[in-house]
Length: 504
Image (cartoon, rainbow, N blue to C red):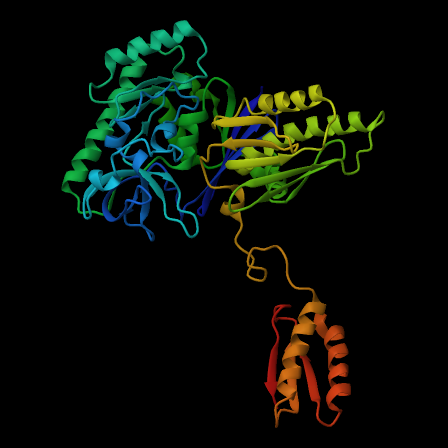
């Protein structure tokens, strides 16, 4: 597979695109005025303990206090069984577990934490609108080849390293060089690395942890102890390997910094980093801008003429598949089957591109044959093989739905680039002009029923005029022309759902 990394930097934001076979697969956007918080480490202070929820609030200096579950506390983690090898290798699995059943543990969170306690935590989930950040005391510091877990004692090997011999070799090496009091995850890119590379990586990470500990002893909470790398260097650290043919960067300063950064751990890859100097904007040249616009739409067309509709709700993402203009050439079952196979590929691509995570429910078109349903699931699993996130896909349910979960690793594209509509407040709908006119009619009728309120002026959007005129005629027939002197003032700058009534 031909892979490119395209980097566009401005004074407002940095945008990084991963292209696979000339198609936009993943997009990373960092607003320089609102940088990513996930991965940052803070010295916080416990402000509230909730034994009923086995959780606590921690002040880390942000607008809202962060949320800490009991299973994200190191001393609680020590009670659990050893962790299995990881299927994603950035360490987030260890610092951000899903909320498991914990009733079989007798320890309560108020036995682990006290109000006013000083505590080191790492953000595992960004703050979201009404919710504060989620944090953990299970710290993970990712490097190029390894992730150090200073508060755990586990060695994990990325499941993407499939050779049993290589896995055993890496485990022996890591056990030899790791600090006694720390755990380690071996990342996928470490496959084939020698001891020297791994030792240098672990020494750098251990030095960073010692600096964090030292800073925590001197600081007054809440305070920031460690900031994760900026978007460009995170992507280079995590994605830039032998499978990437080129990295194109459109600003000279980022180009030079990127080359210097890569020289520390992969000097053999430096020649693949290039400065883009063409006149056209780099994202336009590779048709990335147009793909981003499409990724912000609800409807996505399939090559055959079918389409999918993607809706993000508070609880989950819902995806619906439709045949659209595709009528097929053989029979209905064949048409539906081909549409669903196309949809499986597009759905996987759109989920990665849009950064969707959590629970995702897909409503494929009903298929009669069991082998067709199994093939659609296999196609969906195959399409997610390039995804570094943790993905679990279930078979078709009795209702004909496919359910999956995907680890949230970043803000969705929609939350990054869009804001809530001030007119519809995010519902996606506004009232029909006829509905607004009837609401206005009810208010006018109530006002005219009172003594002394016969001359009124209505200020409204021009699109409401025909419906308002119809309602006013009805009021005149009801109250009489002399008792119903109503004038209408049209204002195109007023929102369509907004109107004003003035007494003259």
